[in-house]
Length: 138
Image 1 (spheres, rainbow, N blue to C red):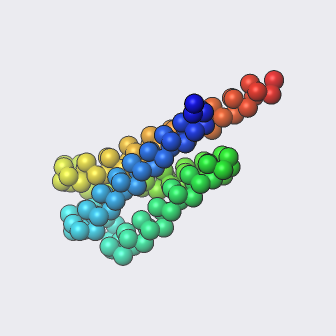
Image 2: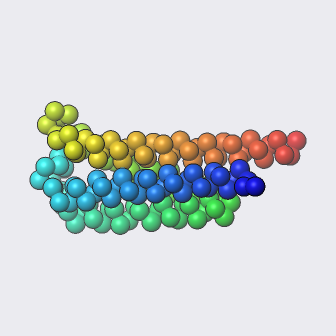
């Protein structure tokens, strides 16, 4: 029989896979169709690539830390990863909603929703883990 922590980690693994997949879809589309994306003047495709390669290992690192019961540090890393995923909403600072292609909205919102769900799940893991610890100790 599987334990609750193993089930939580399995769900976390799936959520991280969904976040990485959503970010791949968005970032590849952003690089391939760069001119269609609203961006600040200083961004180019190399910066977009570099940011993706910098942020994505945070998913793996956070998961490894959570798996090793380093929950506060692992959760912090995963919150940072989720926050990086929410930065895609910044596209809306540079163009009105109606000025962005539907395909781009889908990729932006998919990545943002995945990041929010991940952050909520990590928060639940933290809260539930603390509650379980309090119940076990008194």
